[in-house]
Image (cartoon, rainbow, N blue to C red; front, side, top):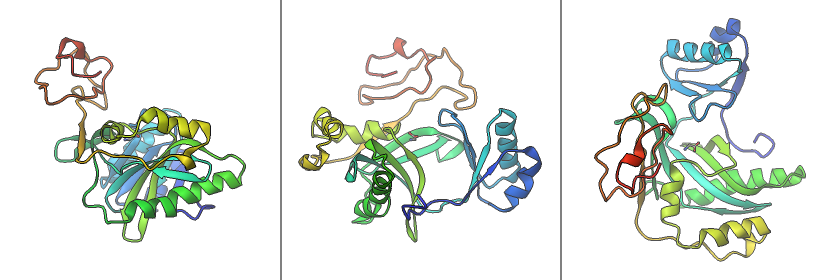
Length: 262
Ligand code: GLY
């Protein structure tokens, strides 16, 4: 990102309990403490509580992973999924993901508890700005390095006063934003993905979108994300809730109405 001139957080790797405190002094509040290893979307703690930040960092190191401390990026978050084929970039609709487990944006961070699209509050031209200032420069930098990317680049961004800054990149669709975004896609998904795979994305006609908005609500097991209780029966799903991802493989969702998707 630095080579591509893309705004992102300042970061430091901490791999010993002895230096956690001095490293925390250089950041926060607010502290952003990340598990620098696979953590199933649950490795990030964003907190103004120094003890909570310290405890999370110590636990990560105890589990054998380095800790990534990052400066806090202010501004509302946006997820923008982009089809990328070398230097060709085609954005999907922007979405917003809500990551705290509880209603009212409280509790631990999760992989995402709900998402919606489009974003009526996003200024006009913001998607083009993200494409021009973030995704295209990164795609071009990868091509320049001889490892051009072909696929779906998920840019997680904070829309700060200075413009979009990258919180995260993933080379996959995001959950739960995808359920909302694809619900509004009218162009055939197979053709769209086929164009990426065949290297013909530049020739793809503009994507067609349905009018309106789409929302995903995640139904999670009690005590998710720390230690989800398994075996509970889901009740109360109505016919209008036609696509509810359930974030616990152990939940007894199949005993519910068939429209609940596990
Ligand atoms: N929505 C967060 C993720 O898919 O990583």
